[in-house]
View (cartoon, helix red, strand yellow):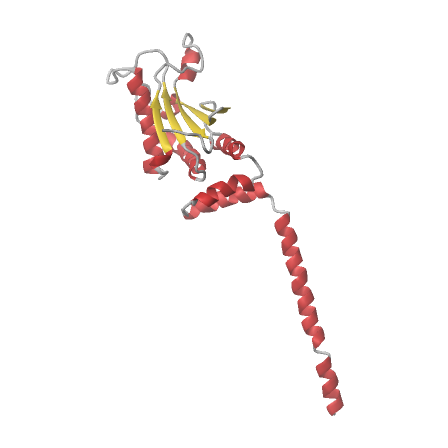
Length: 223
């Protein structure tokens, strides 16, 4: 009877060994799954979760997301902005220049003719852009532009005033409604003096009436 109990005790190591092998398999399976993750989808998921829970965005996370997506930072910003303006149907465009990434918003999508107050139905599109801006640390210039015709509203003394006030209105949406830190922005009004097209045609004037958001490259100096 004593010999049978001793034999049962010596076999118990098999259970511990089987548990160890199971845990080891689970560990390597998890490591493989992590190595095969779609990093771009993970980045988008992280952005969505931060917005849903209104989590504060730290400087380290702003740098981390473009690197996680496997792109250069400005390329990542450009692709995110193109996705954000998908519903504007030709009223917005994204381009690059030596300063960084520029998103041009046609004033017809943002303002009533001769007005400097942002339309309520433009806030949804601006919220999509704000989500991109909140998750990066780049400085931003908001530039107001007009065509060469005098302001339709006689309350504005010049296109200088109209272009500057429209840029300030967009600034207030981003800082007051979407809580983007105001120290990241610079505002400029250029009136009709930096056109994209000739002002001799209605189509050209429509393209020139715009608000540009210039997302600067990291390290680009702005006073």
